Image (tube, helix red, strand yellow):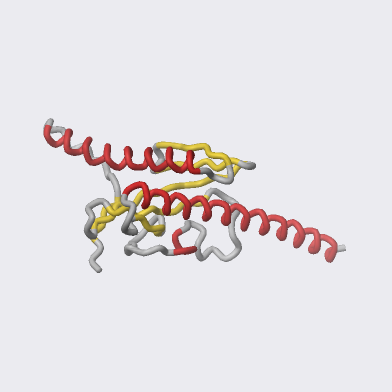
Length: 171
């Protein structure tokens, strides 16, 4: 009797594994499309956005599967997945990491940016949705800088806000 239960458990784990791989593949595809379209949106020439890990040190390069929060976990968990977008903010070696978390529900993807904005897009993602995400990312980053400058100019810049992860990356 225990063999039947083990087989049932193995089948359940196989279905889980299939769904978790589908979840990862869908999220990775959306992340890569966001990276590519955002780079084109910001600068039609140079590569200026990279997929990086959501935490820890990073370089100006695409980390492929290591850019996702489930990297190195062995059996892929069936859960929302985070990744980092390293955006060149200076035209030089300064990059700001923006953490995105994606959750797939049916044929929709919910994309949360820095615990601030959430986008609900239909899958497969289309150019209209990518353009809206690009504009929102740009406005979010631009506002972060202009708000800090305004706060400084008004003498109210000591808020204790941790802010973004900005790094200088030398070639």
